[in-house]
Amino acid sequence: MALSLMVDALSLKKGYRHLIHDLSFSVAPGECVALTGANGVGKTTLLRTLAGFIRPDGGSVRYVGGVDPEGSMAAQAHYLGHAEALSPGRLAGAELDFQRAFLGGTAAGQAEAIRWLNLSPLLELETRMLSAGQKRRLSCARLIMAKRPVWLLDEPMSPLDAEQRAKLAELMRAHLSAGGLIVCAVHDPLPFDVRELRLTAPAMETVYG
Ligand SMILES: Nc1ncnc2c1ncn2[C@@H]1O[C@H](COP(=O)(O)OP(=O)(O)OP(=O)(O)O)[C@@H](O)[C@H]1O
Image 1: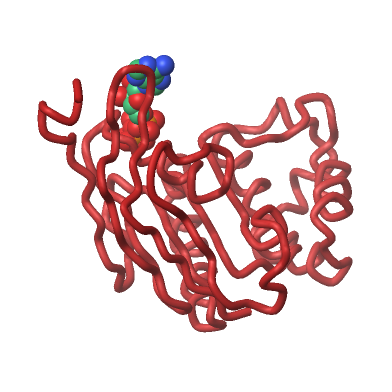
Image 2: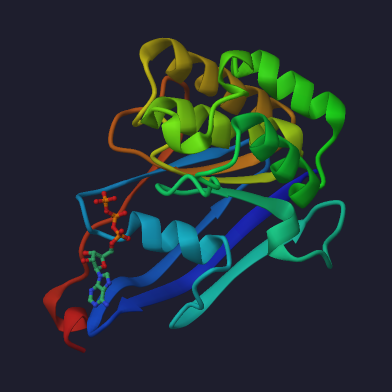
């Protein structure tokens, strides 16, 4: 389970812009790093790079240790983005079945996710009918169904009500206690101890350099 994240001299461009220039940091097992910064500064882009969806323009992203050091990034991480990645015409219950099979989760994990996230009332509804917060709860089920050491979360609390935010915070704390690591883009502070990594726009010479 224990896996560390090492980011070294990372540079990321979007079009002609240098979004991130020479960024280095590491995240240890049991640690949560909160990515903060203004809209458009590059938090989502950085998270997607940590997930392996974007190739860095410079520097490196490495995951060190873990039960399967040769395993692909996809098998070690959960990425929860703004888009919920739910099939709109599928019943929520069928969506959970699909996600569990796709991610290699367990039946016990699925039952636990339904209980913990109070998904029972939603199971017979098509996912397109769910509210934003309900969709996010359904998306969070994968965190419970399939154990993975790395959680990359993009503003996970934003559509949730106070009760559900507290539940997700408890889930995140349990993940950290079990030796997992979390990198989480946020605009509001998380209700537990985190290390903040504040992204700022690069200096002008790197924008056009
Ligand atoms: N093709 C492109 N060319 C130039 N800039 C781009 C391109 N695509 C995206 N961008 C810019 O890249 C930046 C990165 O956006 P990103 O979604 O990573 O920011 P964010 O910090 O997550 O923002 P928010 O807090 O609003 O979610 C934005 O400023 C966006 O306008």
